[in-house]
Amino acid sequence: MRIDVLTLFPESIEPFFSVSIVGRAVEAGLVSVSCVNFRDFATDKHRSVDDRPFGGGPGMVLMCGPVFDALAHVERQASDTVPTRIMLTPQGEPLTQSLLVELSTHPWLVVLCGHYEGFDERIRQGAGVREISIGDYVVSGGEAAAVVLIDGVVRLLPGALGHECSVVDESFAGGLLEYPQYTRPREFGGMKVPEVLLSGNHAEIAAWRLAQMRERTISRRPDLMMGEDRSSDGGAPN
Ligand code: ADE
Image 1 (cartoon, rainbow, N blue to C red):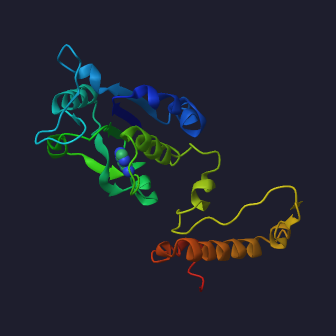
Image 2: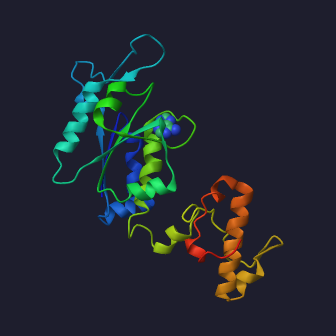
Image 3: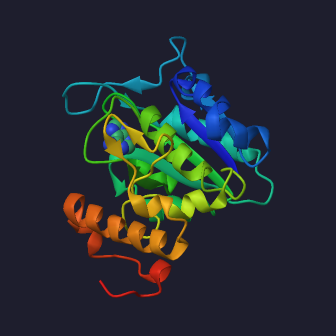
């Protein structure tokens, strides 16, 4: 997979691509991630990339010229793959685990990060972007959102995690929150590991975990229960 991030602040996200799971995936050649700075495509002597909004109002708006030129520059390097253009914005489609799964199958993502008051509307209209939001709140720029999206996608690439099954078991994978985990010691500060986990009975452990997943999801996120995926429990009764 290839990911290009178009941003005004590459230095704020580049370090993220060399550590932990994303860093290891890059090193293993599962993904390449690079940043392009819109400012390198400014055409005036002040290297302007944004301007005041027509009609007045606060903030600055990213201009069409540098954004379209940066896109053309990045995509000129294309061989035969078609890039999926993503614009990060609070107005976009909500980012969910199933959207991450879908995006992880695309060979090439080009991610546009906005800042200040956002993008000139004609970038939305003309660039054929898929608008995505990381949640119903506002962060200072698309860079923080890009880190969330890229991490969520890269860890789904086959081989990115040590254990393939960690993706299967974790929260949201089957529409439920994850069961509680314990490790040594068996007792800490008077709190004990549930007996069933020490029993060695794998069927009982699996049943206990499933019950915990359901209980947690019902109490914390009842909205998720509406779409519960029953494939992992063979359709066991509730
Ligand atoms: N930029 C600012 N807030 C954002 C959000 N919630 N999602 C995506 N991009 C953003």
